[in-house]
Image (cartoon, rainbow, N blue to C red):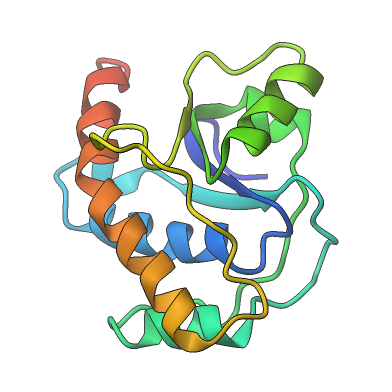
Amino acid sequence: MPAPGHILLVCTANICRSPMAEGLLAHALSAQPEPLKSLPVVSVGIAARTGDLVSENSVLALKRVGIDIAGHCARPLTQELLDASLAVFCMTESHRAIIQLQAAPVPRHLYLFRQFLPDHQEIPDPYGGPLKLYEACRDEMVEAVPGIIDLLKAILPAK
């Protein structure tokens, strides 16, 4: 279990989108001042099977920008992870809707990953597609990271 106050990233199986988002956001946060720099970033899937390996194309898409997620193994979403999170970011409206329907309590800070962009579109699942599709997915996530960091600055508890 990660430390309370982690950032939770949610997709379906936790083998494509959310592991890429975890790698990208953790990398971006590592360049920020404290306390952002020390925020744990965790990815999960609503239908994940514990221990499934990250998809090869997700690994390659991030490797091309210098981030290694090869050791990632899937983890299912739990109420315990939701309860301990500072903020939760979902890849699609359906992920968010499932959390809103099933979580008790629903996390206070529950967003789409691209919610802070003008088009705030969902991030489509690249599963089974060519590397080019995974790279497009990665690039959509990279665009969203500055807005997420701004939000985290605003909601971090004062120390």
